[in-house]
Image 1: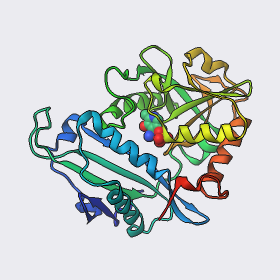
Image 2: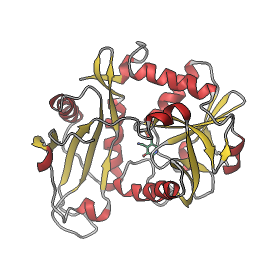
Image 3: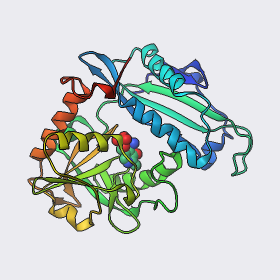
Length: 306
Ligand code: PMP
């Protein structure tokens, strides 16, 4: 549920939710020329805190680079805008959505003198794939759609236009009765989910596709690698994973700011491990929630308190 009586930060000002609109001839609407972030603020024992804000903000600016999308606000300004958005909407926990896009001026594909509009919104958003998904895992389908190769479009930039591919894969899966998709890359290896990175557990070791597999360099992916290594797991984060390896994995799970840590119980109706949340997934998922809800003082540098 979006906070329809809330406020949204738009180009330097707070505007009422319903007034945060843009022109129908906005460049970004026609050509997908925007970049965005998806961030969570958690209701922690020390108050509301944004998880890994600095890394999200860094990726936000980096995502604009291939498009010469110049964000005229400094990191300090966007941080203050974001904290104030969470405060003014009176949110204990929130999903935070910064977005920057080429705005209204002209409609050549070249953005020319289009302004860069910058917006930050926040609203409550529960478990992305449902509470039950976090506990019991989900059924996923390997999509018939391939992920765009990083030679075709920068896949390490969080560009709005990229998400038509995510929509195709995700909706194909849901039409077929699955909760989510796994998307293969152009080479036919496992890339990621439509909005998630993927991890595999086999013989007590952990594997996740490397950054050259046309994936987004997920911040939750990095968090899980860190948590797993701290617990003594061997993590292979620079590998290719073939489609067939999915079936023989002991455990599989998705990670993402929205999806958090979501176990995968079946792939194309083939049961993974015991068909439940596996023990390594459970341990790391618990570690993740203990971290983000601050039941530990580990990695306090990852939190920006509201
Ligand atoms: N891959 C894609 C395509 C995504 O959209 C996301 C969500 N941002 C992720 C991976 C996970 O990234 P993060 O953990 O930084 O949210």
